[in-house]
Length: 340
Image (tube, rainbow, N blue to C red; front, top):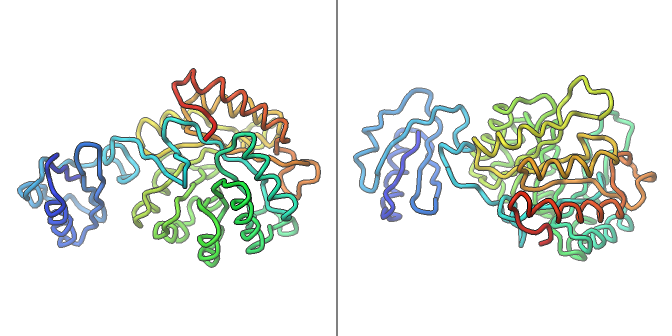
């Protein structure tokens, strides 16, 4: 259910409605808009009598929300959400480019790489300190040492940092060192982890599970937002299919559909979908053309020496080519420049 406040409603009116909702043992979610504030309601297992709220001062309407996802849908919030990370805005007029290696391998690999990507136009730097790997015998990341290296890379490049959180046990360290918490595809339905990052003050980049439906994807984001964290970025990274020429199948059709039914920003990760660096640039171009708010790509100075996912990592020269092509594409889809 959604309570729509009058354009002239003051904070006392909003607080009064929120208290009335809480008195019903439900959870209010104030959602400021450009003209008026709306208050979403979650926690009800049966319909709520709208007359209990419609007569309160400042209320103009009470609307039933029909979708199972409440906070992520446009029924609750018609305006696009813009997630701000430092000077970077994700979901605004400009395209956001997040780039960096699959994993943090050393200071010598990471810090110069961040500086180089900043010079080439990247907006944010990505790198894994904790790595979920299919085999227990492959490189699992440097852990907290990797987080400290990422913090140094931010200091040297001024780029905000994105890194993956795999377990609630590590959240305090991750929050201390990085700017955006990534929840990987394997953890999209790790509900205890989603609940925990819902209480975090850090924005969350949520990747779609490799077999998740659109509704499941949005409900996973709902777990985070229900905890109070409204700064959620959705990421399409490919789904399993019968394809035998790429690692996953990049489902670009989900991008305009998410933009239609959800207010959250959407980025695309063509590197994990492709599994081959030769496919990354064409898929990144297609993602922006489909309406994505940005792309996240893996870049390594020496991909053949990478300790994880070297085959899908762009070289620095290829990343420069990608940035040049995105600068051409973005005006055609009525978006701003790719450089912050």
